[in-house]
Image 1 (tube, rainbow, N blue to C red):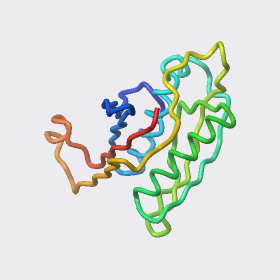
Image 2: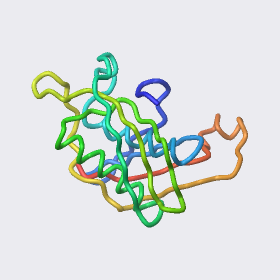
Image 3: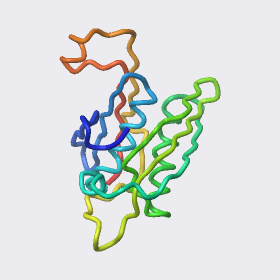
Image 4: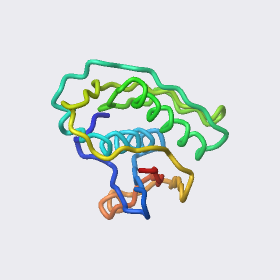
Length: 159
């Protein structure tokens, strides 16, 4: 999935931090949207989406439950941003393994260039504070139109 085409995330103010709310048809999609939301907060992705995707990277993370898996996935992406200056504009989750609590994704994007790339607000860290992951059974189109989604997650990031 690429940024800016019918985004499936929102930001909610939280004392001195920001809460990311992401959703999708399953948890893999919600995790991917959370990743894009994180990057969009740090640097507006509508600017980067106009630039051709020039870099790709495989991201792997593991945990011992859904919360630690989400934390590890976003933390690995944040680490990649800070060390390689990779702005992810596309995230494709290739494997989402609940038996081993692991995720493998391929991300695509461009390089953050200081002085050229528009900056948003720096995210310093992912937190477990008020982290919430929701999965529902089948939902109807009426439910979707009222904002009920099959998979949703909430994660607070330190800014």
